[in-house]
Length: 298
Ligand code: ATP
Image: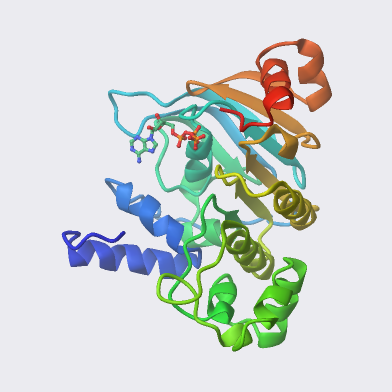
C-alpha cells in the first residue's frame, strides 16, 4: 500500500511518529492522508489524571477541507469508565471522532478534553499513550506474532505476551502453529483471518492497558459465532475503561451507557438503547431494519 512516490522524508516523519505513539500501522495510513502535522504547543505538558478519565467533546466543528464541513457542533461526554457508542450511516463522521480524539487533526471550533485538559495543550506522546485503538482492519507487521502483540508495549515479557493472547482468545491458535509465537505473520507470512487479526489487536491493547479505548468495529461481517465471541472479549477489555465504540452493528451497542446517532456530521439522537427504541426515531428504524434482515447498519 505504501506507494513509491511518497517522499522519503515524509515517511521518516511518519515513522518517528508511529514509533513514538507505539500504536499500529493503520495509523500510518491515516497519517499519510494528513496534510499537515499537528504540533505540540509550546510548554505542552503530559496528560494527567489518567485514573479513569472523562472524555468530552464540546461543540466540535471540523473539516478536513475548509470547503466541506464534516462535524458541525458535536458535543458529548464519555464519563470515566463508561462506554459511549456512535452509530449512523457511512460518511456521517463516526471515525472522524476517533481521529480527533487521537489528535491526528486539530479542530476548527470547540474543545476536546480528557480529564479536563484540552488535548491541544498536552504532549502528543502522552495523549497517544493514554488511548488504545482496536481498528476496523488491523494491519500486521511482517514479523513474528510475538512482535505484533508486544507492539503495544515493546518491553513486555514473553509471559505477558502469552497472557494477553490468552485473554484475547488467540493463544490456542498461535500455539497450534509449528513455530508458535515465533511464527511470521503479515503479507509475507501466515495470513490471519479478519477475526484473528482483531484478536491480535485486542491482545496488543490489553498489553498496552490504556485508560481510554476506541473500538472501530469491523465493517466486514465476521461469522456470527466469531463476532459474538469478539464482542464479548471487547466488553471484557472495556471494563472500567473510558470507551468510544464506533459501531456498524447495533447488537454491539445495546449495553452502552449512551448511544449517539450521527447523520451528516451532527448528533441527531442520543440515549440508551431502551430510550431510543421508545423514542421511535432513526435508531428505532435502524434497529427494526437490522432485526428484519440481519444486515449492517448502513
Ligand atoms: P463509515 O461508517 O463508512 O466508516 P464514518 O461515519 O466513520 O463512515 P468518516 O470516516 O468519519 O465517516 O468520514 C466522514 C466524512 O469525511 C466522509 O464524507 C469522508 O469522505 C470524509 N473524510 C474522511 N477522511 C477524510 C480525509 N482524510 N480527507 C478528506 N475527507 C475525509
